[in-house]
Amino acid sequence: MTKNTIYIGLCCCLLSCGAKEEIKQEKFDWYGKEVTVSAYNSVSWQTQGDPNIAAWGDTLKPGMKVVAVSRDLLALGIKHNSMMIIESLPDTFYVKDKMNRRWRNRIDIYMGKDVKKAREWGRQKRFICYALPKDSLVQINKQ
Image 1 (cartoon, rainbow, N blue to C red):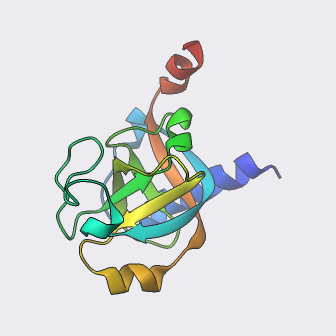
Image 2: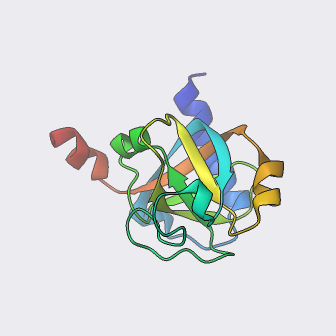
């Protein structure tokens, strides 16, 4: 069994069991990957500029289901507003922010202003599944 088979199986499991939101699966292809998952907050010492404004200009508010992605993951086709499911978490998250260029193979879960919760989360290895519009890999490969 290859890693891709495992990832696809995990994605199917997460989609059928874990995600609370109804996602129109016929419009997306789902891919999986193991990444390091940490957390971040809307506090000035964790960011440059306004801590409530994400890299693509979105305003972040506590309670939003948002992640920041390391920039190397953008090469996989993940982009602004891409849907993402994180192993063992019940919600669908949306990509709204980018991490510092020094990070690789990593996502940060947005935890509002709750620094204690983010520290308790720490750093964990998790499988993620991310949605790409059908045929988007063909467009990426042509570039």
